[in-house]
Image (cartoon, rainbow, N blue to C red; front, side, top):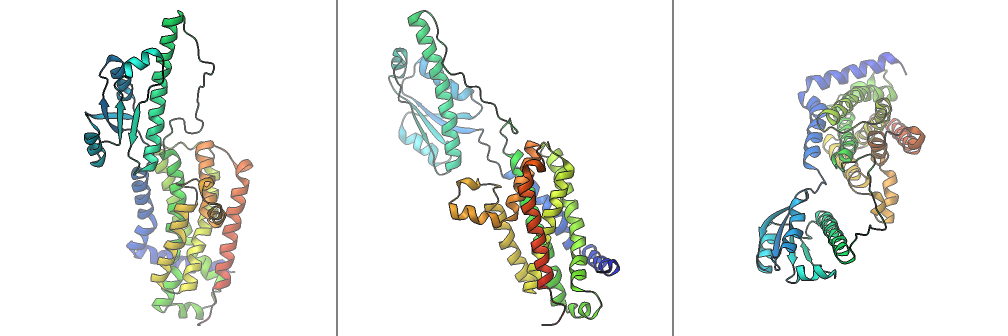
Length: 377
């Protein structure tokens, strides 16, 4: 391969990009826009659960129990009702997500230390939010029950006893449990996979549709030189996108970067090379811009979003799907980004993911070169 030929093809592609504002907007503006939209709209935090309350006991003890919910940062009491029908209307209309029912003998039962059946009804149409809300409610109820039992023991025995286990949970790597801290790194991988494949999926197909491929074939430029020349401009733009995404994660979303920035960009370069080559391979095979763009979206977005571990834990998927995730390159890049961003670890732990990502990049680059034939067919 001769550098001058590669430079000539790369220069031609750069000129095409800068002369076409739509291509430049797709290359730079769309990844940033997607990061902003997904970063703010996609959140798994549940910190304001609206609940309706039916206090059938109406005693100081029941009001104290209810106050534990209103004082919690995770619950907001939106209405006090006096029956199941009104509570059901609150849940059906979306005014409340849960319904707390205090029994009539709540205070009397609590004073004797017996078990109190308190009902907590949750709207299960959003199973994730419902599960988290039930966990919050269990914590509030357990805290109140523990305090009441200790006061009862102190009143009866004259002294308070300590609990046998004093568990003090501590969260590493994401102490505030903010979903954006692991969503943003995963978003970078998904967005770059989709945009990179879309960009290069139009390159070779565009030459065929415009009739300029015949001119390129007639030149001394070899196949690998043509592919590399078309590859380089989008690689430069893609790395610039990664740089902007890292800056946005740091200063717009305040996601901590605890690991090596150099390692992050090195792994991003390997991943980007493979993603761009996927688009190039699609463009070579289809020879149609419309078909290439549609196929690139199906091949990259759905697997990257659903099977990379970005949103859904791979360990919770059915076994056959877990096996399929090994074919999704975004899986390894998501693991690398989360490890570098949140844990601050390096290749001494992430060497398997880094190695598989490098294998993916090499295989796809070789496939693109093999499939491209410098001849009219």
